[in-house]
Length: 322
Image 1 (cartoon, one colour):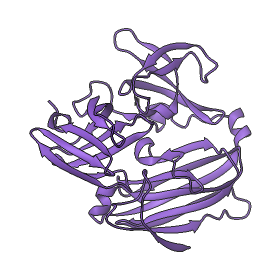
Image 2 (image 1 turned 30 degrees about the vertical axis):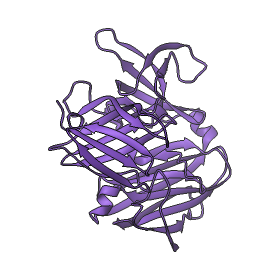
Image 3 (image 1 turned 45 degrees about the vertical axis):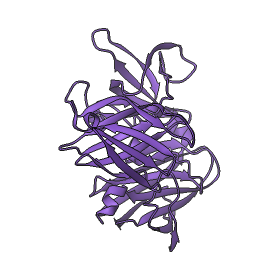
Image 4 (image 1 turned 90 degrees about the vertical axis):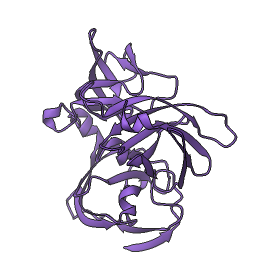
């Protein structure tokens, strides 16, 4: 094990630009005759733990994180590539997929920036296993079955490019005909998922009076409350600019509201993925680790800058409802 002191500049992890992050690296070793390992550990504040393991192309990996802190997540990366295969704060603390190449993979365990700033701690249990992908495809596992089997009852559509829709297909896989389309923020019932090659496909039911069902790529689904269950979930668009010199445009968002201006906001980026914003009492207190955040108030708007480049206008109604 070794501790590396670095400036956390990655757009999808780590900490505040004004401070450095402690990244502790540890190589995962499976016991002889075993294809998995369970790691118990603890995090506090800005400390990040990276677990490295070597795997081969086509192997299937399963990762699960159990934790005492709801702000504790893991990301999965291929080597040192900052573009994560799985981002826990968006997709949850379970992952199953087929690895794309031979080499090292990095499981990064961290606290969200707002929790790190409060110097919170987390006791966690990380389970990792690697198996034969061909066998897994012959005996597919519904890694997110219905709500009674551990997965969510409902999904929300996310990460679809601005102005585009998510294809709903008659069967699992792109070879099947399109039977409908969904937009970011649409909520659908979860009817179970399975692996098709390297992708997770989920059967869903959508619509209100005229319901239809079909299959969508699970990359574009995140856990959600039922449609109309409360006023805590919402989606829409906000004024934004995500590149230097770019005029103000519109970006889709989704929000999960708590009490008194506490909210988690995800803004869809034109280049793909989402930007995360954490609010407490109506004030932004954090964003994706590794990026600096500044803001000012203008009337009933919070004007936010991230990384000195991105700009977002967040109205109070988005955070408080109404």
